[in-house]
Amino acid sequence: MSKKRALVIVAFLIAVVGIVYAGNEAGQGSLMKLIEGNKRFMYGEMTKKDIGESRRQDLTKGQNPFVTVLSCADSRVAPEIIFDQGLGDIFVVRVAGNVVEPTTLGSIEYGVEHLHTPLLVILGHESCGAVKAAMDAKGSPGGNIGAILKKIMPAVSTAKKASKDPGATLNIAVQENVKNTYKDVMKSKIVRELVHEGKLKVIGAEYYLGTGRFELIDLGSHDEKQKAHHLKKAA
Ligand SMILES: [Zn+2]
Image 1 (cartoon, rainbow, N blue to C red):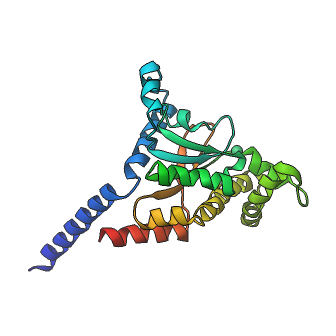
Image 2 (cartoon, protein in one colour; image 1 turned 90 degrees about the vertical axis):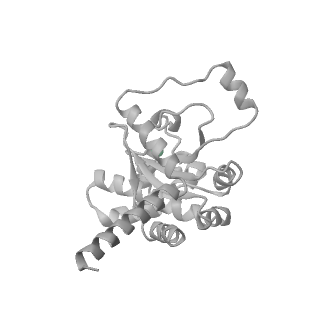
Image 3 (cartoon, helix red, strand yellow; image 1 turned 180 degrees about the horizontal axis):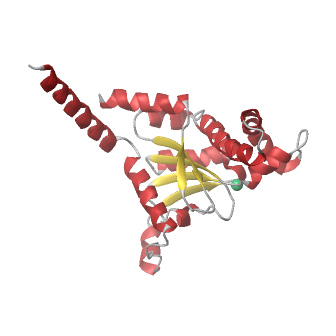
């Protein structure tokens, strides 16, 4: 066999494996739905939702959401709206600063284990007030809001080392906070096992208030491990 012909065959096999891998990966279809819905939202082409009585009656029998989303409680970041979805489509867990503690992690586990959503999105957003408050906090903040800020502070420390510009620091802190939440979420045995079994994909993303766009965040080494595992399974 000529060297050129061998190279063509290798390239073809890589392409086939790539297509199979993309098609089989857990959560890929859900992610595509979110990307397409977000595009419709961005361009003002939102679809008409069936939220009439028949749909509500259907939903009394049960729910079958296609994704679990952990997002900030900020009123400008409503997942059903920014992803152009209807009733029963998204299992939403919301808390200021999109941080997790046992009750929110339990809610996420319910979404991914009992409702079998193949995708979990940890969604931070531009100009997050909770992250800004953690940046501005002096000493050790008290009270219930202080408990949220303390969860965000490690991300702020990392961001302050990375940049001296306050605007840039805030956005870096938003992204670092998503990464830290991801690490906290992966402490859940239920989530870890679903990921390892190839039944769940966990991604981080940031929503931009002005443009309406959401963008994926590279979750670093943990994400690489997840990808490597999926590749190993697909091979
Ligand atoms: Zn926020």
